[in-house]
Length: 212
Image 1 (tube, rainbow, N blue to C red):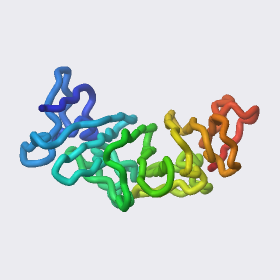
Image 2: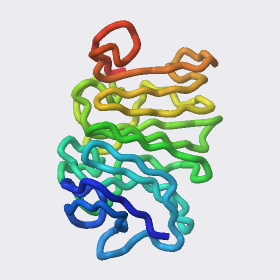
Image 3: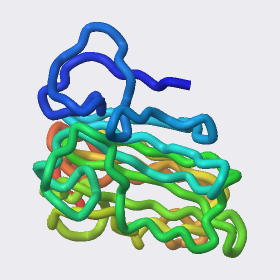
Image 4: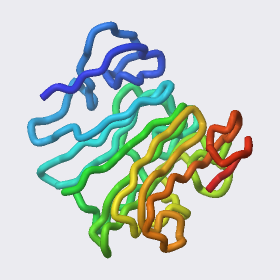
């Protein structure tokens, strides 16, 4: 199957190998005109201001591989560089040991950053959360304000939870789930916010910036 994109393409965020805008759906290309092969399936996608990400499943591996394309001014493509790309590039830094390819994964693009939630087979209901790109307001949840050029595990979000979901905004993020989400061993659901808190965007009663 062909997977398509359309709209603004000034940074190559359509993933078709050029920077020409398109008002009709065009094929996403993996270089040299190659689109998704028959044994590969697109499982999810997300778009930011000038970059896009997708999750691709390869039945021959089998793995869920994360690809990104478009603007990379803050490392939001997660491939270890600041070079933009009009073709999908593979995100680096993700640990695939004990990775569970039978579960759904989630990817969410903010303005110039990306969050990824993956599931693993070690223990009971193990999830890992990764962040990459712009972290000037702590929106990656890493406890600092340094950008990341590759996918970096967010240790402050504990992984032994039965389920959680993620959402990204302009420069703030939310994680919602149950279990040991914040390290307090509580089983109730929680909503955690981090990043820029102006206008009360984090919902914690203060217009502050929090990195975790």
